[in-house]
Image 1 (tube, rainbow, N blue to C red):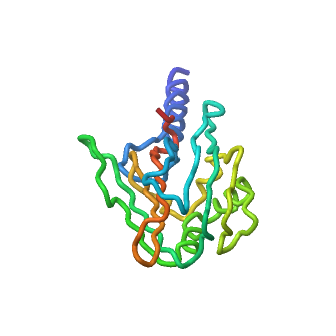
Image 2 (image 1 turned 45 degrees about the vertical axis):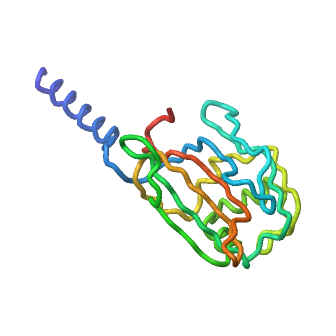
Length: 192
């Protein structure tokens, strides 16, 4: 009888340990925790005003605000994306990921992938393709969890990152600049 009890306990503890396996690897599939969004340079052609993150519940964050385009957002621009990582001894280390491409509008939509549809819907943008007409686009709230379905690598190093998006003209002048600070955490971890 006691042997059967020990075998049952051993079986249950082994089956439980398999479902709770949480490796502490430096990279893997991740969840995104958005921390900040802001303009990084004073530009007056493509600007965000009053865009901020609002925590609606413990687990849900929304982006609220408006974006003003004084010129159409089209493929004459260059998209310059530089992702900096937070160093182990502090400070931002640039060039964790770099993506510079012409045809900014089309390639920005490709980078956002399925998240672009959520942006179009939330900001009431009248078109889904390029060019995006000039105007002011206002949102009462974009659920940031829905923006995680983008075309970035699905496996990456865990940590804190700062993504800087710059829109440049053919003379390499910055016409719009936005920063998104976020953390990539393990799927089972809780945000800090």
